[in-house]
Each structure stands twice: as C-alpha cells, then as structure tokens.
Length: 110
Length: 132
Image (cartoon, rainbow over all chains, first blue to last red; front, side, top):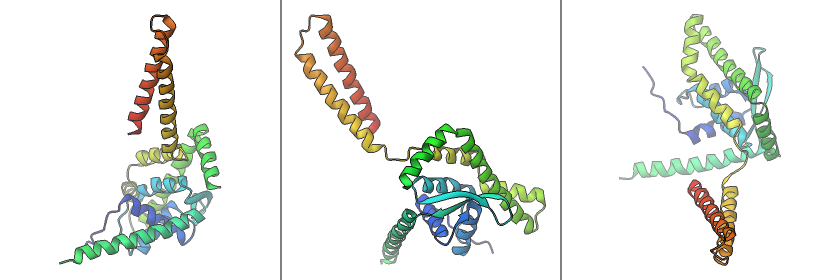
C-alpha cells in the first residue's frame, strides 16, 4: 500500500538538516539518507532542496564544510555542525516542541 | 570566528565566481551519481536509474544557481546599515534645507543649493521607500 508522505516547510527542513548533522559529519546525499532513516521514511524531501538549505546554514555559521573522500572513494563535500549550529538546534527543538504541543492542544479541543 | 570566515567566504565567492560554480556543480553531481548507484542496486537499468535520480533531485540548474547566490550573499544583516544610511541622509537633507532657506534666492548659488537640497531629500525618500 502506498504510504502518504508529509511535505516539509523551509524552517523544518533546516532543523532536520541540523539534527542529521548532530549525529556526525555527512555529505549532502548522506544527510538526505539520514533524514529518511530517522523519520522512519515518512518525510518526503525533494533531494535537491537540501543544498540551498545547507548553503544557507553554512552562511549563517551553523554548519561548516570541507572536501574529503567519500565511502566509495570519490571526492565529496562533508558538512559538520558548529557550536553555534548545536545551540540553534537546541533552540529550534524547544520551539518545535512548544508549537507542536500547542497545535495538538488546539486540535483536541472540543 | 565564523563571522570572519563568512566574510572571507563572501569575498572569495565574488572573486572566484566560476570556481564556486564548479564546486557547487561537482557537489550536486556527486549526489545524482550516488542516487543513480543506489537505484541500480535496487534493480533499475543504468538509464532508468539515472533518469529517476535526476527526477528525484529536482531542477539541477535552478538549485545550482540558488546555491551560488547564497554563497555570494552578504554575511551580515543589511537592515541596521540601511537604517543608518537613511538617518544620515535625512540629517544631511535637513542641514541642506536649513542652509537653503537662509540663502538669498535671487543668485545662482542659492538656486543650486536649493536644487542640491531637493536632490538629497529625494535620496532620503528613495532610501526610505526601499527600506519598506
């Protein structure tokens, strides 16, 4: 049976990228794979949209990148979280929990 | 430190725009290549795998352009700078206007001064409009 997958808002994608990188340095493709893995394959991301998100996060100083060799011996750009990025992730997780809690409360109101 | 690095990256991105574009392209191509390999491993033919990889990636050129634009973006917030500029021009316009009303209106210098005051006021108006 086909599974319906949720689309993502801009800020949510940024948060998921930060979350994926909090588990270790990855290249762009790996980030997409990790997001799929940690979301139980529920979140649908147009793969290319990861990159503007990554560049934006790097521009803000929340991630940093360097070229290295990938698992299949190819040159790839790896990203890792900076200290500022880790702080931002904590902040966004708190905001998200608050927002999700408030939305659930509103939806359950009778 | 990251702010300094962002500024260095910003200058580098403008000085070496082609190099940055090549780097972005290499990164995006790596992704498509990895997806193609994964699709082949799942049983697709190489052609099908490549086509599916390109489709799941999205608009390659558009994404490349977005990444390059972000690289060339200013590493700091422009709002306070624009606000400062607006205040400076408004003060300058006020000063010009004050001098202009105290000058005799019948000589060329007085007329030119008034025109300069109008020009500065126009600048303040335009900067103010852009700020909105």
